[in-house]
Each structure stands twice: as structure tokens, then as C-alpha cells.
Length: 425
Ligand code: SAJ
Image (cartoon, rainbow, N blue to C red; front, top):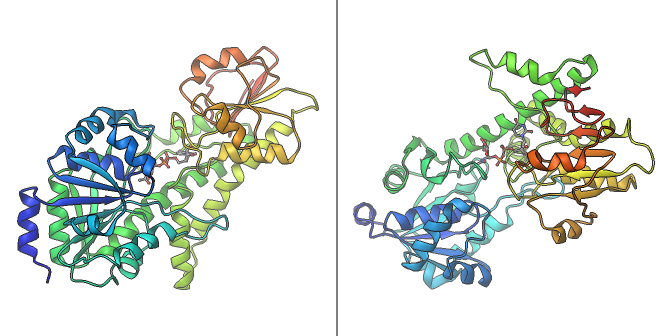
């Protein structure tokens, strides 16, 4: 039988063993925070290499801000990484699921990593444990995939809110939404997170509200970016500078600025809304605003390519600077700049790629030719990395045509700067 009071006491006195399943950009910072606060943490990973890296205190994420803490907690064995293993899972009092929930090529939810965790937990005695799902799923998925596992345990949802590359906001200081399958589960999860999070928690009535809140947060962002992309396409035709328009609109208290660009990438914004679209479809509810917004964003690499083709002449040298999904992050997932390069390749237009954060080998593995910082006739800004500030001088001559996929430049460079919703000439 599960025992609320026993587990509550163990949590309050930090005697609980916390198991975190998945030590990626969500799980690893979370594991460190729990370990730093004095909990004994086991991090469950699938690769031996990750276990070895963590035993040596090596941070395999790009986020250097966790380097020092990682070394400390792994050295003190407050955080121990281990291959996923039934007996070790069974030893935990709390299990927090932090695995990816991507989409397939056809944009259907790919729940395989999440279901693999459920299959694993099905062979573990879960009695008395608190299970928390941080992975981004649609309403009812936690209840229907985890909540059906045998045993008498507590179950809660607290969607991750990590913002990769954001120095200001990190796992410790972002408020967390928490929903429980019942009151005791909610109270246990709230007590646990309150002990480790500076900016506290936001309790909601059930699992589904927590799951839908995460879907709403990210769908809101995707649809608002789509709206500004649509306005940018009109602004281009009207020769109106969209950045001036946004600057003016921002003076309105209820306007939340988003910016147009070559597209929307990453593992969250272009992905999560497809989960809610599937639920809506299953429930016979049309969500055209969301569906069309995603399509709008997915069209942007092509839109930027069309701009380039109006100026491209056979034989011109073309360099794509930056192929990651957003600035100063070395993540290629769903990257629109990479999609742009694929479109270029399909048109058999010769080009080279340079990204200060992506090794040449990785660029070649993508099937692209690596380039160097040298004068080019067409420079495409795929990602506006910080390094562009110093790198642009090496690439731009007075005749260079700049296709600015991130509206990076504020003054004319080269012959002309063709942005998304603005032109600098
Ligand atoms: N983007 C635009 N225009 C914008 C903002 C972003 O085109 O105005 C593009 C970016 O270039 C990128 C994509 O959208 O390709 C996603 O950008 P993002 O800043 O939202 O980056 P993410 O994917 O790291 O978003 C994370 C998300 N965190 C979680 O899902 C837990 C998201 O919820 C946050 O809203 C976001 O950080 C944030 O607020 O910075």
C-alpha cells in the first residue's frame, strides 16, 4: 500500500531517493538541482558513454553554466548516473520522467521513448513511489500511458520549461506547473519541488490541466510567430519595415512581440502543437488557427529561398552562415536553416555552410559542403549567432547580396540586405 505520510516525511527530510529517467537538456539540470539540495539522485541513461562522462564530471550538454555543479555533485556521488535497471529503479522513492517526445517525419506524435519508459516501469514494483512526468505530452497521455501501470503509487505531471541557451532563466528559477492524479500526489509533488525551486510552483487541479498548459504555452508561441511571419510577407510587398512596425506595436500593453525569420525550429515550438492537433482530431475538434500557423512557419525557409533566387545568377558564390535552430545554441533539431540548405541542394545550387558552433564534420554528415569565412557574392544568414558580429566583415564586400534570414543587420551591408519583412539598401 502507498503511504502518504511516510513519503511526505522522507521528502521533507530529503531522505527520498530521486530517480531521473533521461539526462538530457531537461533531466541533467534537474538532477543537478536535486543533488545540490542534498537529495540522493540516480540519473538513468541508455548509453554507457553518458555514464562514463558523468562519472568523470563531463558535461555533454552545451550549457556550460552547469559545469561546476555537475563536477561537484558527481564527485560527491550525490548524483550517480546509471544504465536503466529494474533493481535500481525499484530503490527510488521518486521517479521523474524526462524523455524526449518528438514527432515523426509525418508530424505525428512519436511516443516511443515515452512508452519505452512505461514498458520498463511495468516490470518494477511501483508501490508507494511518487512518479512525476516532466516530458511534454498531450492531455490524458500521462494518465493513459503511465497511470495504467500496476501498483499503488502517486502520480503527478510537471511539464519541463527549460529554455536552452537562456542565461537568465534556468531550471532552478522558472516557476513549475504541477498537477496530480489526486490530492495526495499533488501535495507530495508540490512539497518536493518547493524544496528545490527558487521561483516556486503553480498548482493546478489535475494532470490534464498541467499537460494542456504546456501545450498552450508553446502553441501560443508558434502561432504568434506565424502571425508575424505572415505580416512580414505583406510588409515586404508593401516595402514597409516590419521591425519598425513591431517596435511601434510593442508600445501597446497587450502586444507581445514576436519576430519574423527563416522559420521555427527546436524540439518544442514546431513540435508540441502537433500533439494537441492529434488530440483535437481524435475529439472531432478543428483547430485551424494552430494547424495553419504551423504551416506558415514551415513555409518560411522556402520564402527566404525565393528571395535569394530573385538575385542569384548561376556561378555566384553562396555561403549559408549558421544552420542551428536558434542563435548561440548548437542544436540542429527541426532547424529551418538546415531545411533552407536542403532546398538549395534540391535546386542544385552550389553553396557552402559555415556555423561557428557546428564542427565541419557534422556539417558534412548533413550532406553539405563546409565553407570558410571569405568574401562571397551571396551571404545567407541562417542563424544569427553572436560570432556574426565579428565574422560578417570577412564575408561581405561592397557587392555582396545579404539574405538576412534573422533580420540580424540593422544597417545596410554589402550591396543590399534582404531581410524577412524588411530591406536595407
Ligand atoms: N523564433 C522566431 N521568432 C520569435 C521567437 C523564436 O522565429 O519571435 C524561432 C527561433 O529562431 C527558433 C524557434 O522559433 O527557431 C524556437 O525559438 P524559442 O526561443 O522558442 O526556442 P526554444 O525552442 O528553445 O523554446 C524554449 C521553449 N521552452 C520549452 O518548451 C520548455 C519555449 O517554451 C519557450 O517559450 C522558449 O524557450 C522561450 O521562451 O525562450
